Image (cartoon, rainbow, N blue to C red; front, side, top):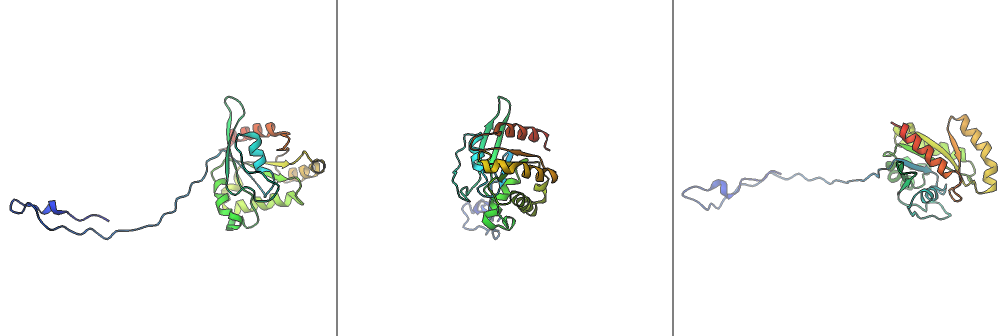
Length: 211
C-alpha cells in the first residue's frame, strides 16, 4: 500500500526532530503463479511412445530420454534443426497425450499449453498402434477441446517406424484413410532416418506459409 508521511514532513523550525509519522494504507497482497510456455516453431505431438523424442534426437543435438515404454518424456524438450545455412527450425517434443488430456489427465494441461506457442504441428502416428487413425482423431479432439485455435494449426501427419516390415505393410492402408480425411501424410523412420530430411523440409515450407 501507499506509505504514510514520515517524520521529515512534520519538521518545523521549532521542532526539527519530530517524533511522529503517519501510518501507511493497508497493503494488498496477491499470490501469482507465473508460467513459461516454451517458444518453438514446430510442435511434435502424438500418443505416448509414437517416436516423438526419437525424431527430435534424429534432427537436432537434443538428447531427450528415449525408451520403449509410454511416458518416457515427462516434460517438453526443445531442439534446433539446421537444414542449411539459412533454414533453422526450433522444435518442441510434447510429451504423449492421452484421452482426457484437456482436463489435465496425464499432466495434459502442462503439455497442451506448450502447443499453443507453436505454428506448425508434426502429428506422429505409432506404426505399431492397434488403430493409428483412432489415435490421430483422439489427439486432435483433445487439442481442440483444450483450445479451439490449435485445431486450425497446419499439421503434417507422420506414420513412424517404417523400419519395421509389419509397419511398412500397413502404410498404404493408413495413407489412404488419412487422404480421405483430407490430411497430408508422410511415412518415416526416426530410427533409420528414412524420409526424415524430407519431413523437415516440408515442415520448413509449411512454417513459411503459416500465419
